[in-house]
Amino acid sequence: MPTETNFSNARIVLADRIVEGSVRIVDGRIADIDAGASRTGEDFGGDYLLPGLVELHTDHLEGHFAPRPGVRWNAVAAVQAHDAQIATSGITTVFDCLRMGSDEDGGFAPGEMRLLADAIETAQADGRLRADHFLHLRCEVSSPDVLASFEGFRDDPRVRIASLMDHAPGQRQFQTMGQYTLYYKTKRGLTDDQFERFVTQRQEQSARYSAPHRRAIGEHCRAAGVTLASHDDATLAHVDEAVGDGVRLAEFPTSVEAARASHEAGMSVLMGAPNVVRGGSHSGNIAARDLAEAGILDVLSSDYVPSSLLQAAFRLAEEVDKISLPQAVALVSATPARTVGMEDRGQIEAGRRADLIRVDNMAGLPVVRSVWREGRRVA
Image 1 (spheres, rainbow, N blue to C red):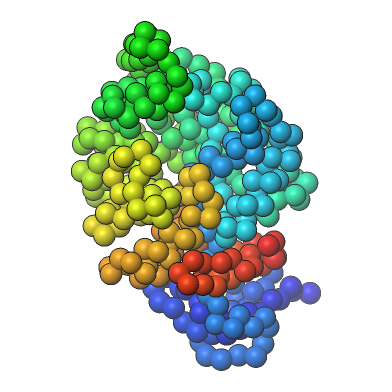
Image 2 (image 1 turned 90 degrees about the vertical axis):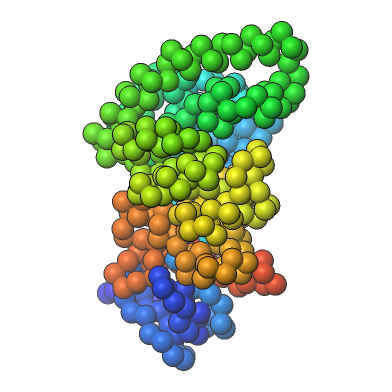
């Protein structure tokens, strides 16, 4: 017997409009969407029905696994806690970021990223998780050991995104030394001599390793069908390099010039939802809202605050004249899904997965009331 669920009296956010009506779900797929009043099924009482959110870049898992310096939590328990917050934020598909290559501000030992990936797999297989989890490898191409880290994920089918990043001073996010000094010298309490040696080492590593590592990872990902992302592009030369690499996702460009060129080249431009909610970047780079107003923002990511994804979508729809709620919702559902080739989700449309969320927008601050993944209520 088919499994059927019905929702009624909802404000249904479709790709191009909002309709008041009902939705029928059969065997985990959206079967029908009908406008008008209905007495069949769960009564939404005028709440919004949105597609489940699709999160392409979140570092949020790290805080559950390493809640304090030197402290490590049970990996499966950490994944489970992370997943609970992800799902109750309205996210039904999530790409968990894992660091590839030694990263001075991470403090993670070799093998710990593989441990987390295995914990995600175990939790998923055990039916512990509410959201659909995939992997996003954050590849620090200037790191001497990035290829060794990457090797442990070469044949992992859950790897769907790999970002190519270089956080060395003078590169991309840290083109000027002011922000780099704050991030690495002041926060880490380095002396002038220690900081000078640190900067010299990172610049030498970037010059030696970035190009060959970028090339090796890019070649593998293109052959394996893994979506490539660039990171912190700042110049037109960076964008040209990304185009040549076959990049589909431009994450956190640091200049309007780079964002516009990436968008016009057909890449999806991704910015942080916390940037929208806070009104600007925490690292002093461009404001996501400026890109949205210019029509060159394609995807939002919750980055480090899962609840910011839904909040940012509603805020853009309310505060930017050129952006409707369906357009804002597409930034956190349809476009990220399409960017990574997941055409089965991200929109409320007959035949698509019934990944859905019920949302009450209370005084401009949305509340997730219920979450369904493939028609099954998970939150």
